[in-house]
Length: 476
Image 1 (cartoon, rainbow, N blue to C red):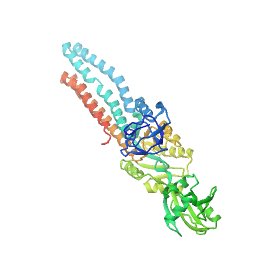
Image 2 (image 1 turned 30 degrees about the vertical axis):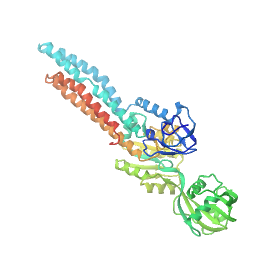
Image 3 (image 1 turned 180 degrees about the vertical axis):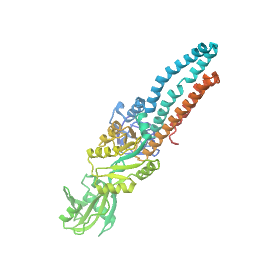
Image 4 (image 1 turned 45 degrees about the horizontal axis):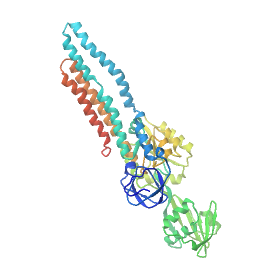
């Protein structure tokens, strides 16, 4: 039992009650989600209004919030190239400067007969200046900041190496269903011929009232009224064609053109709109058709525009749907290329072709739902799982997980990655530049110990403060 204001402790399904749930802590989404009987709710969210009775579906160790914590905590295990470079650099740099300091303390007095005290002091200044603290601390901290800031926005990055790869993405390939589209059927057009649009939709909903097919459900949802089953009798479902039933004493048929031909309803024709057409006939007279399609998500077109504004060279859609549907969605959203009627193995082949087209230094990202697209997600340079709220397969297969269904978050992830990399590069150049100048001045006896302290501690503090800017993802 979860009361208003309480945080949901475990993943589960709502058995009783109705409420709205604040998911901002997990998805970064400010608008609360509706929670009704049958809806899944996830741990970490806050119940805002009504009392909910929830049946638990996962133990704490397997719950969404526990997996997210594990992901973020273990992201440091996958270091970026920059972090590996700093580790290798420090491995050789530190012994080199220690021996250089010893040489500076000993060789000039022995060769030129000068006082040891002067050169020992210079060697100590040299040693303080050369400490690689700024690099060793600020570079990993920049990546931690980028990963942490992204996670607060509902974008989970599994490691600094993936964040670095994301910054270099030039080609983005998308799955269609569930990624760019809603992944569920809905009525997109009603074309009546003999009766009104509302009456045509009502007949379709009634004749399909006993079917659990996704198309049938979408017709009932579009009608939005309670079904009066007393009006419906003698329901007959014809595989591959549609449904026939008696409604108010009239013979009503709803299905494809083959069914219309079977009931001798002349006038049925293919619709020019992409999608599935449900044709309706009453007592053998054709009444019109309803078009059902998987509609694009509200922000899908915006996501493509934003990616192109970031300099993404090519956007591609890979789908198993019919070519007509793929062409329509690609044209509607402004996608550069599309491949349709693909099996999972065909998607991998298409991705291999795209990988071969990459230019030097470019990366390819694939965005999918993380379950049936697992082979492609793992093959891409960066695999991004869409709509992975509570999906185990998505979290396992992808390198980046978007905790909501919004394609526009892909552009946000690229911005965060690029900002993080800018901060990392700035810190490297700044730290090495300042240390190089002050090291030369220290060896020449111009820089004193105060300058050495600034070159070590001061530069470290400045680099750390700069690295903290990676947490601010709103201005990425």
